[in-house]
Image (cartoon, rainbow, N blue to C red; front, side, top):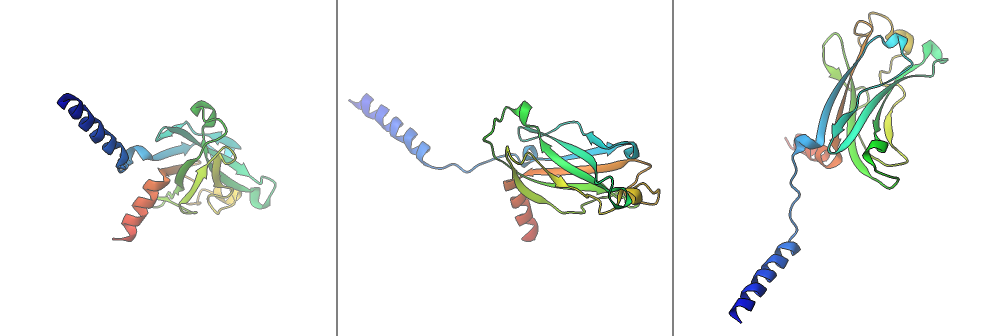
Amino acid sequence: MLKHLKHLFIFVLYMATLAVPTPRNFDEKLLQENFEWRIPEVATKKEVWSQAFFVGGYFLYLLMQRKNIKGPKGGTIGLYIHLKVKDAGLGQNFYVPLAFELLVRNKLTGLYISAKGAYASPFTFANRAWGYVDILNVPWNDFLQPDCIYNNDGALDVKAVVWFKDVWLKQNNRLQNK
C-alpha cells in the first residue's frame, strides 16, 4: 500500500509540474541576425539575389531590383527581404513573426543607415516578402554618380537586421526604459 502511495505521490507531483506554465527561455542571439551584402557593379544589374542567411530556423535572402526603369531619372533601387518557403517545407499555413530593418552604407561615414526604419510584420504564404521600392530615396541616375554617398566605387553595400518580433519588442522596450 505504501508503495502505491509513493507512486501516486510521484505521479501527482509530475502532473503539477505540467500544470505550471514555464516561462519561455531562449537565446536572443539565435533569434536575430545581422546580414551584410556587397553588390558589386550595381550599374550592370537589373535584379540580383543574395545568398541565403539563417534566423531561428528559417532561411531568408535579399533581393535588389531596379524599379521603374522607364521612370524619371532611370527609376529607383528596390530592396526586399524574402522568406525561403520551398526549402523550409512550410506549406501554405504558416505565420513567422519577424521584424527587420534594411540599411545601406554611407561611404563618407562608413556607417550603415536606415532610410526607412524598422518594420515588424508577419511572413505568411500571402506575404513571403517585404521591402521597399525605393530604399535609398535617390533616383537611379543620381545613385550612379561617383559623388552619391551610397555608391561605393560602383557597389552598393546593404545590411539586413532581422529579429523575431518578441525579441525586437523586448529590445525596444529595454532601450526606451533607459
